[in-house]
Image (cartoon, rainbow, N blue to C red; front, top):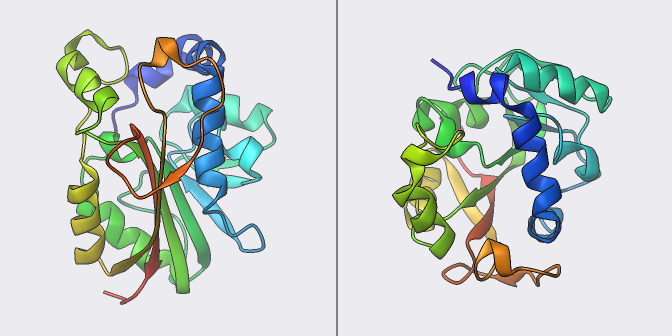
Length: 213
């Protein structure tokens, strides 16, 4: 069952986080922008309120939270009520799929990734932005998840774990970027985006479809 209750009931808190952490948000956007093939047909899985999709130019996606879908539609985004484990798209019909801070809320990460494999066209891309479990921020979120509105039922992954799952579901890794260095409350400017992982708390992995399963 999708973990929508926090997002159905706390839209204002969700949106406020991105205002309060403006420089973090912009840093994350910059990292994701390095991976988006803008000339291709793409979707966002777990599009939320559309707060990432809008500036990234992504116009369609899926979202199980009714409240978040309603907000996304005000941003002129075509959003469908669905879950990552059962995507409402035909086989080989999408050029790229994006997930941003979504993998920690999936009921079944393997089933979700197999679904992405199914809907991607030949040489399609799967782009994932997430908080690395082993990073400073990831450790803080994990240690205090019971106190969090949004992360109470989350399952965090390390970059190493995610790369292994991607390879096991038919993908090959093309690029890895990282940003968000240091404590959130001390970030007072847009930060650089570096390649690889191990320093930044926010990691973006761009994987290419290698094998249809």
